[in-house]
Length: 182
Image (cartoon, rainbow, N blue to C red; front, side, top):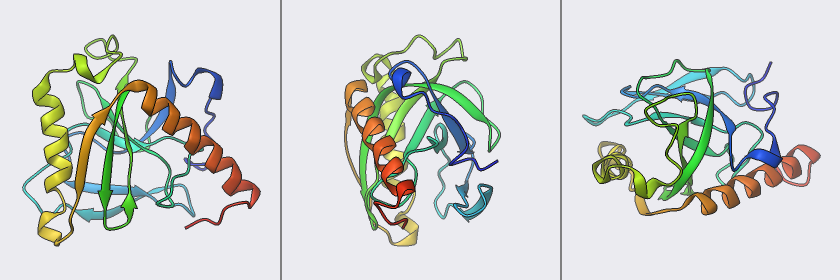
């Protein structure tokens, strides 16, 4: 089974729930990443800064973005989640980020199976410090690698759903051969 290609995503219900494959557990300094060829997770690097992931971080299967990767997602939950675990999530917003590779959108989601987060439907309902912590993490996590990151303002769940639908369409085009894998 390949984590990117073989996990079903129900296009008709993505505004309610979709799968996220966790790569990096909340609290980790290790940056794990999907090995696109095998579907396994590999250690990409250990973060060079004194920061750790503020949420469980992973990707949405069967999606494709301009950076050549699946669409990223931060999943808010009470506990760290083991890499390669599938978490049922709901988008509550998104964060637009630009790094050395260009545009790198991140869906902000909640685990629908976590009672502390499952009722959130919009990022505006979250404690403001949590959003500031997420934004600051992405502004800082590559600084000591001499890489610049620009984080724009958070957008709402409708924006996240639109980006998710677009990335599902791009994935289908890529698999048909209409797009080249990066």
